[in-house]
Length: 578
Image (tube, rainbow, N blue to C red; front, side):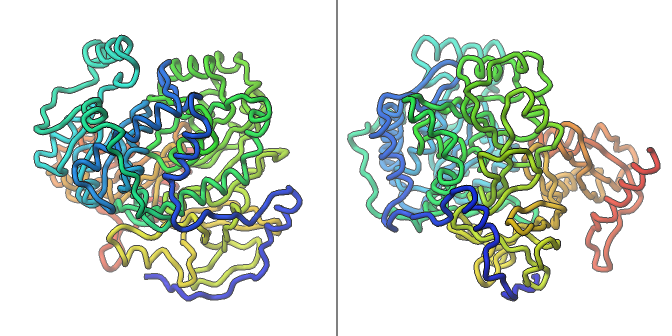
């Protein structure tokens, strides 16, 4: 474990003068401890009523309907005997049923476990087991993944079809196309499972009992992340963490929405990033409900044709995305010709926004991309650039309201402004810790409550922070964290692999992609074999894109694989090639 001494801290918060110059409030007021996200939802349902809450594939549900459906789902979950502290995993792409399931779980007083629907059986099994989830709500397209685990992992399974909330006729058409035309639903048979519609109607909203024992300090979400190591673990995000981040985002970025309020219009949030990802979960899903926006759900952001169709039909006011999506659209002729007059704010997160991309985006849309920074452990927004910035500066901005950022050395001492150190965050949005992993929690938290991000940065005299390096071995693929340990663990199980090491290599499209160095146990092993095994056992973004066979992996004197040496090897090859 690293030295976690408190060290010294600057008393002055240099970013406060930037807040003053921008006319923003640094201090936020949190609601009383006996409130929760449930109060946020109920306030929005009452305030926005019959206004549209979410749209997907041309179908929509209102805040009123979201209120009803989520109460029905909550009542059903309560009828199963699930109690406070029990976990419910939700595994689906951006479809109308997803916000219903998410809010239903939270309104029932339970803990939500966000699950990537593209997970392999190996990844799903780990998350269900580690979280001790009691129930799983998933879309039928991925039911076979759960079935293929080969054993009962949860007590209750609820399965939805893509078209369940699209009305009888359209729902039937969508389900027919998904199942029989596109053949996106592998056959499955999960004993004892119930349908989503059955769950909504079996008990009824009138039987819902609003939990009186849920407050700000209770855990709302287990958000799985590799943290600073490769073992996926659940960041415990409390109701306070998430409510605080909503208030912080609104205080800092909400002005972009105010003109819509004045006109009596509903702003649209283009939700192309999956809601199981913490950036989208908070900044699109929860914030959209909080502000009464229309959440435009995009099930597959790689389907640019459908995304462009939605963009044209429902012009967005707010577009949070990663650099790869901004870049794809900025190079698309159809997008360039569209009307972008409604677009008031574009926010980049998950990965660095590249300057050429930001410049193209500004020329096309008139928007300067607001770059933010955060992690699953910070709910996620820790820093951001102001909404009214005059140009794209390439920094990750200043600390969010009520948030302290310290740049620390390895001994826990704060470094002078302008010098490199680890970016550390303290604030009401910082997680409670990692679920069932006290030692891992101690490793990333300082004694005085700062979360050590593992990213190396510098802070200037106005409080703006820039990332200059990464302390940990994490690979950032299109905004998704990939941890070499996890990929190595999976790939090392191949019978013809003796050992392997994984690093990130630069990629024009995704920023980085994994490359695997393999020591063969059997000389007949080919690169194609390795890639095929990865496809079978790892989610798309985690799969190695490149394979290199090597006689021996560089190791420390205690046998630890030295990824820095593998990176140096790769850099030398790149230099030699150029």
